Image 1 (cartoon, one colour):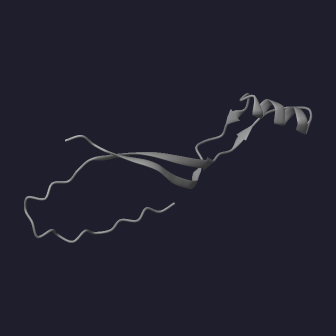
Image 2 (image 1 turned 30 degrees about the vertical axis):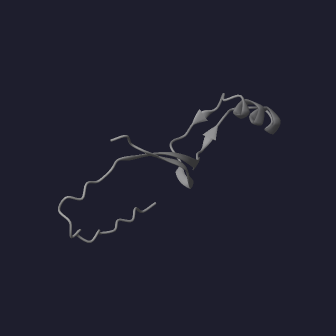
Image 3 (image 1 turned 120 degrees about the vertical axis):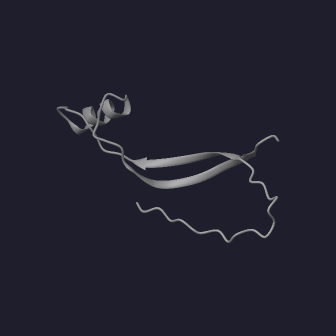
Length: 73
């Protein structure tokens, strides 16, 4: 996934201060997990119970901004 950057135009006021904002973000990832099992049903039960093996971090498939908090000055 590529990142996009944008260049901000210089401000005309020299006394402009930036504020810090904290956010809560929901990130959904597509990950690959695996288990050893005798049947599909057993594999599904093992994965649902968290008994699988993680193959690596997945790519972000969805990002949703939940809230933004203004920092106290």
